[in-house]
Image 1 (cartoon, rainbow, N blue to C red):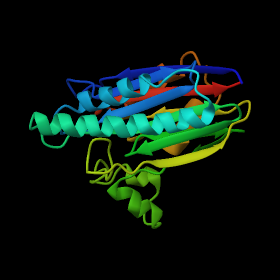
Image 2 (spheres, rainbow, N blue to C red):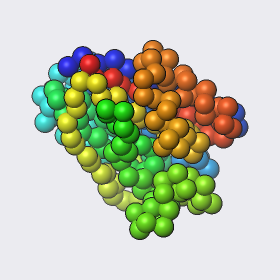
Image 3 (cartoon, one colour):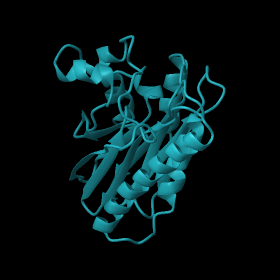
Length: 236
């Protein structure tokens, strides 16, 4: 399996600090987007702690050990962030996460919060993760679409994050990958502006070398109200 990818992050047009962190470890086939919680102290510390901890995973692990190592690294970061917040009396700090592993002809992803993973295959897009947020409950009950949920007044209210709460509940999805698949990991700095239809039009067929920057540019032109992080991966 040959992999090509494009990755970019941007502070946006409104915030002074980029609280997002991204990680690309193509040799280990690990990619991560972490979004520090807006409105909380030290969100940038939280997201950077996540990617730094994941980056310490031992290289050349077999797939099963790699999956367990990624999960353990995220849980370890959860404890580090909680301890830091308590030691420095910072209140609640944390970060969302979406983390992807590719192994042979399969993928595994872990996530908490509203950073997302999409797959583009045969001209169609599928959202593989489900947001942990208040508005996600309205989507799952059929009251709103995901696009409509982005316009809801409580669209930023997430219900899970690394570093928040005693125990971190990570969701996991696994599945197959085939030649021609394109995968997108992103923070909500993109999805608050990009509808499903927009993503399909922009991502399908775009050159891998420039697609991350193109998506950043789209979010900036649409307002850039939050930090924006993009990782696009092609399976060849």
